[in-house]
Image (cartoon, rainbow, N blue to C red; front, side, top):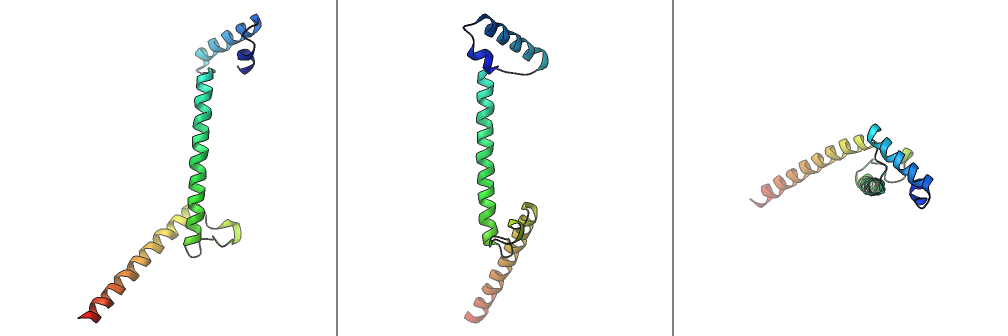
Length: 109
């Protein structure tokens, strides 16, 4: 399609473009520049989201003990295991906070 778009001043370019656009309708493909631009923008957006996710996981690996943020083997835990470990770690921290609250309440009475 790019070749046809770049040669619209020639008859063969217009014919090729027309044929591609007709094929699009028959096969369900959309070769228009607007669609290609939209697809590229979607791809860029997905890549940005993926990069944000990877950066977040790297930070999480550094925070969670045993998460592998210290440069361990394989770069750390896989995503699913890392999230399970994070959940467990948060529950443990919550339990510790509750124990400390009880100790404070007991000692202040």
